[in-house]
Amino acid sequence: MSIPVLLISMLIFFTLSIGIGFLVNMFFRSVWLFTVVYLSITLLFIGEAGFFTYFTEPNNSFNQLYNNLLNIKSADIFILGFGLIGAILSGLIISILRKKGVKMF
Image (cartoon, helix red, strand yellow):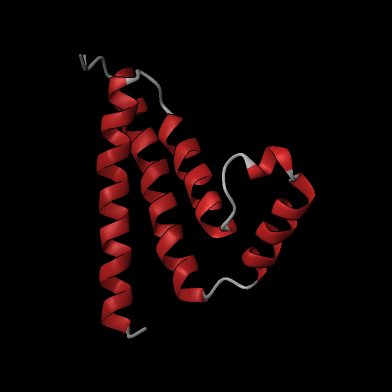
């Protein structure tokens, strides 16, 4: 992956994560909901196993997730990491706005 594509992908994931996280946290009146959702979806995506497989065959699915986490490429780590930073930042923004008394819905 070339450097410009990597930088643009990181910026897109960061921006989308902040925007979607801000809306989700605002609608559900929570602070860290989207961060948990983002981590869950990311781990499901990396693990390549179905959601119910983690409950029906936990040994195989968690071993596959562990192996896939060890073999993830550095570009993917940067892109998904910037998405996680955006999700955390959206929670911080909502928290700060609520402390300042801004009413959202």
